[in-house]
Length: 84
Length: 363
Image (cartoon, rainbow over all chains, first blue to last red; front, side, top):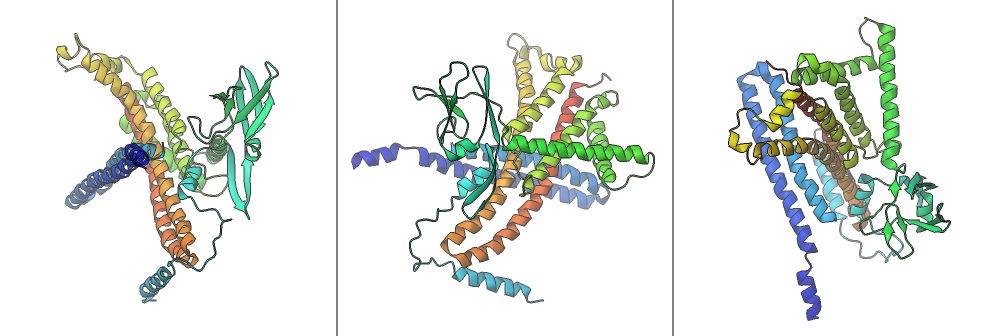
């Protein structure tokens, strides 16, 4: 009985899965903060200068894609940990 | 229909009542439990057969050919052998002994064809089988070739007249890649060298992303969500950048101007940093495309699987859940359409930027 408890206490696989799940959540926070900053500054500058709205919109989508890509690196690592 | 909101929420709440578990139901041991993780992984990963649907417990799939090389000899067989039995036994062509192939369910070679030696160890042969992703690549490349052939034929027929139909759609995209991506990033003299590759890679990624979203056979294989495909594309960009870079480019890596001398000699810190950067840029390209497309597919599959998970508890709850899930899945699918275009655009733009940096003209 004691041996089973000891084995369960030192088996780190559930800890790894917990870490992966938490890390995916934290990565989402980072992505959300970055993309909201991009969106808010883009909207502000579009309000200041409506003629440049097309350019600003393209740059906003581009920058958001990069920030999203970085958060997806974290998701890929979490998937590797959770499944492997 | 002003009261439609009340009707929808009321029907949803009524369905929620039915999600109470069915205690009166007899134990049904024949039905398998729905394993969402397994179903999602089956749709994301590559496999040796193309599973189309399951009709009344009977699986309908296309069993693709497996082509492996062992000791220089080629063995071709259908993957149906692995569906019916666990092992496929054939005669070794070099020493006329028995050769055993199998697909293990766990370990290093999980899901891939291995040779089981006499002492039980596994060896992975040189495997160039036609898997699901390879077949899907053939189909999508045939589609792309047909589309572009039709566009060029239209140009030949119509000459200087205004474009019509398919031709106008492709012209819009090609002119966009040429003017807003290539010409903005690469200097005038060298644009035409890189333009064919940029247009090819843009349409390859865009069309394969879109085809991956269609769930019906022959589309629906997760091609650009396969790290091998994206790594190959990134490798092409890497080779083209470094093979056609001019002397300025290599001077910027090994002898960066404007950096103090003590970072280059005796310990070449700056060249090291620049070289590592040279390798991480295509790696990041590959992982960005792979992660975006795969994550999108997993989200849509997760929403659809949630219907089946709730339906296992109670059928009416599944009906209510399906209304909810379908709306969310359609919404995520619309985002996926946007992501399909954005990822193709970002890959092409970054490749153009790297080409531009590699062929900078001296002012």
